[in-house]
Length: 115
Length: 110
Image 1 (cartoon, rainbow over the protein chains, first blue to last red):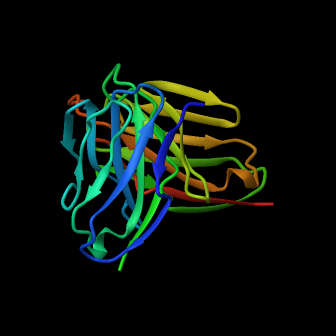
Image 2: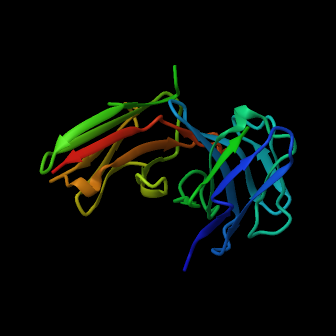
Image 3: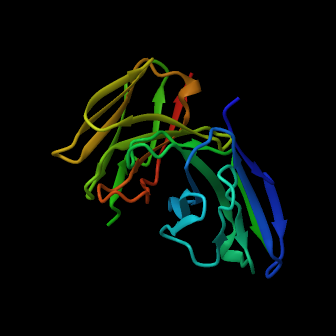
């Protein structure tokens, strides 16, 4: 089954404790992206990757890191989480055939609370 | 002003009603995407369209590139259509930075 898998689904942590949210896709997609969703602000793009070792900033990259060492995986790293990073996070992937014209497949989401 | 704006923000309808959700954008785009977010939080892509109209079951999406406007219509609405509907635009500059509307929360009452 084609899918994007995020882990964990729920996470409560404390300020400053490094964490990683994993994202994996089994569709051989070149493009992967991380979004955060906050009430009243909607979805906002954190980072995206167009292929292995190719990443770029979205609109809200501060406080986050990503890596793309393998095509299927795109982990999101919070080196020193802060309460303003409490949010619902989504990973997504799509093919890269035509800019912007590919359906994105979303993971189920990770609800993060930073105390 | 947001580059992608949706209206209305909230919508309550009776079962069977025809529903329209609007999306206007100020950026140049190559295509516009409509997404559906279920009450449980999961997001699925409904449509990607760059011109004209697309239909999938009771859902119809239209776009007018010149007027920078898209609409999502739901015919014969049903309580299971209750969800948040989100439009998303990647700019025509060829980047892969998506810009999202803040969503329309739809509730269909039985």
